[in-house]
Image 1 (cartoon, helix red, strand yellow):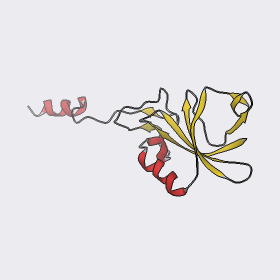
Image 2 (cartoon, rainbow, N blue to C red; image 1 turned 45 degrees about the horizontal axis):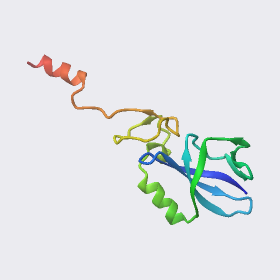
Image 3 (cartoon, one colour; image 1 turned 180 degrees about the vertical axis):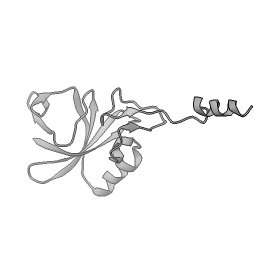
Length: 130
C-alpha cells in the first residue's frame, strides 16, 4: 500500500502530525503520525511486509490511526491545532506562547517569545523621564 502526503497539520499539544494522504487510486485518508520523523507534503509512505518506508527509507515514525478523509474533519484538525506553521503565512518565526511538544519544529520555524511590555528599550526611555 502506498500513500502520497498531500498536506500536514502539526499538533504542538501532542507532538504529532496529521497527514492528508492520497492513494494511487485517488482515495483520500487522514493518517495520524507519531515518532521522531516529521513527514512532509510530497513524500510517499509505503507499507511493506517489513514495515513502513517514507520515500523508500525506514524512518522513526509510525501510524497511530488512519481514518477516511472528509473536508469537515480536516478543517476541524486545522482549527484545533494552533501551530504557527499550520497557518502557512510564510513567517519564519513561531509566535506560539503555549509550550510545544515538538523537539524541533516540523516547519523549520524558530521560536520568537512574545514581546514583553518591560523590554530594555521601554525601560531605558522611562528612565529618561525621571
